[in-house]
Length: 322
Ligand code: UFG
Image 1 (cartoon, rainbow, N blue to C red):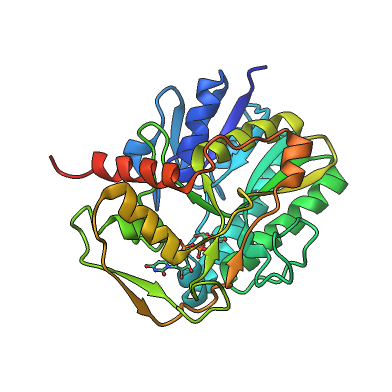
Image 2: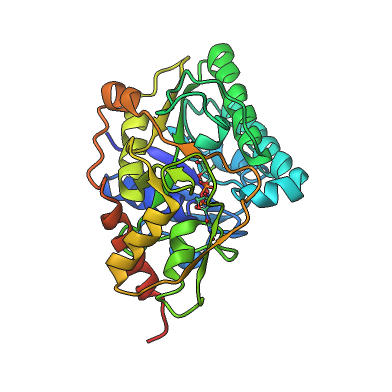
């Protein structure tokens, strides 16, 4: 049934895709975004947009009465989180605590939170289940884990219906919405800058990891499949419970395999050179999403890496000057 939903960070990559899917499913969506990393032209049609901060501006909005909040607004660069931790403890943890308090005061019953595979750190076992130890290797992951703990206590004490979705490596695009960071650090959009003529070559960070070809292995998930998981999570959230789901496809691709797929999709040779390891990178991150499949009924439809890269490439091309 249609719900009135507040989407923080709805002008960002994942937030805009999820907001668009919520609107397409008939929900009444208000996007709250301070446009610090989001883009005004990524706000989906058919929603009300409020330019503001989730820490300070959500409280007044929530007094209107909402059925739930999807909280995407966050700082999300691993490297930056190590250089400037205050930006992450404040921008992620303090902001989320303020939002939780605003939800409690206004009796807003449901929360879907953007958590991350970065909460696990270097895993003992792959695929990673939700029961795996949480030992983040970077400040970004530590802040998302702290918020997960706060949500658990709000569910227990105040009856919040909460779901945290721990995303692995999100890729692809949906309609006119795609990945577009002012400072790009993610592998696929960086690799696609070469065929786009914006970069000469890519650096592969580390080729001596204990993996088949020596480069890091990641589990890629299509942003549209990720959005479906949010719709299911909203449906399944239950008062007083905090559920946690890993979202990935359960298949690992090495950084070299990602570059190869980008070559196949674009037909460009994409020169790649090995470079130093990047600090804080686990060798292998692959999800077990069994829990999301059985409990949410989640079934990814775009599990092929070539399809994700193809959609990312269409998005990149759509933004190139004619
Ligand atoms: N990489 C390169 N060259 C580049 C950029 C990245 O070799 O120019 C490598 C990285 O070192 C890593 C892999 O590509 O081995 C993937 O890196 P990304 O930055 O694309 O993604 P991460 O796996 O580091 O991080 C992503 C999200 C985080 C999230 C994490 C959880 O960006 O927010 O997944 O798995 F926490």
